[in-house]
Image (cartoon, rainbow, N blue to C red; front, side, top):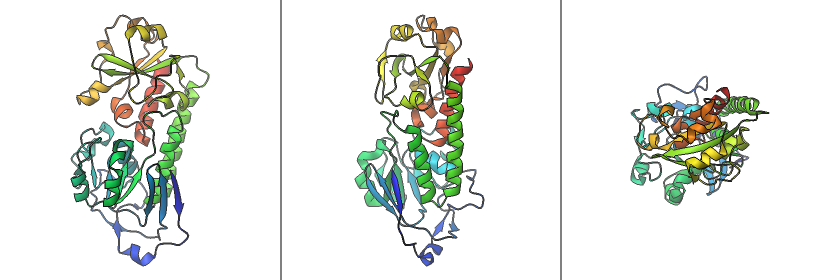
Length: 331
């Protein structure tokens, strides 16, 4: 994603009449989430931005006042920057954004994969944030309001996943006149990534990332939605095969036994889909799984499924993912 400032500044007189809730005195997120009707005058001129993304080019003429976020990652970005949310899907809200479920003024826009376009229109947004999950609605959404696509690749996170998250954070910081806060959050993210790399650097352990779905398992390799675990955080893969894509490669218990990983990270998709807590390690009674080094050494980690599966591409989600990765090296 690329952004450009126009040479001329938007006339201050027009902005002084626009009420927005994007410039706090200390640039810190408010608790609980603020309704999108909260107002505060912009104190400095705003230079219009041209944002280039995978679906096109979007011009942001003024600081957005009513923002719709159709992906939970986008909601987290807004939350981190203290930007009010006018509407969002409420079918799969991660625990770290749970306060938005019943927040006044935050409209329910249906589901993440299939947002209700009539409700989006009724929310009267002046900015809509989407990911590839809503990309097929881009044209219709663009006719309602300026629409920006978050260029994260959910199918293959090997290439620049962490940098894409960081850059999107900085881009949103410019959109909402929150550059200072965005840079602060980016530095914190950099430090968290370096913490993980400092722990994995030089370590011999090899790991498998597997998704649990109603008793079956899929494995995720370097070129998959969890590729950044290996390339970005320095975890060594236990499987020589390149399990790729959004859903991974179905694998058997024999496959896991033969790979014999030192660490196993389990993403419990069933827990997400059934809105229940993640599985307990003790429930894995599979004798072949229990023969792995990971099991014998207490390094089977049932990760935060909402951070890994529902999101995985936002500041809070990435920090939670890193915490889970580090647990695998602590035993």
